[in-house]
Length: 222
Image (tube, rainbow, N blue to C red; front, top):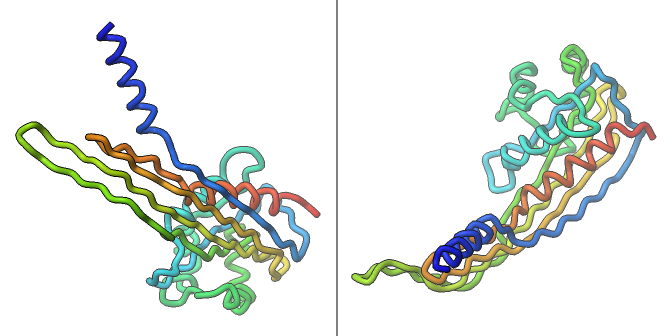
């Protein structure tokens, strides 16, 4: 009987350790022109990098790129690093565009358009946004004594992810639309001797929603 209790306790701890907080996601799109992509064409996902709190996280850019290149309706993707190397020096940190409005002037340059065509890029996807903490509360106290160590209390915090992707068609030299993804969620960590976090995977939720919508947006010829 003691063995069963210990087994049940261990199972409960494993479940608690892998549980996650609740995440709510919203995705929207604005279409400005028709789209479609051939098997020999690819996309590149770029983030805003300006060494400030407003820049998009590398993890999010990599997540969207990875999701676009896998699963159903996958599309060819050139990594951001490979693209920056191939397009040197236009997309280096010191010369890269800071806003969506700066893209037309860059991608419509004839010499740059030729380079983009030579490496097979059909769409440039420019992402702006980030994930940040919006609220937190509670308290957690940990102590060590001759009787042992332990933590007691309850912490909670809320994160919000807000991203917008602008899609630029290199072949036709125009913007074809935007896809936005917003996610918010509450994480919490109760502690009775051992702290057990319930993490809301907010950024992952925003990434998955955006990548799924981008796939549909790009591959759908309408």
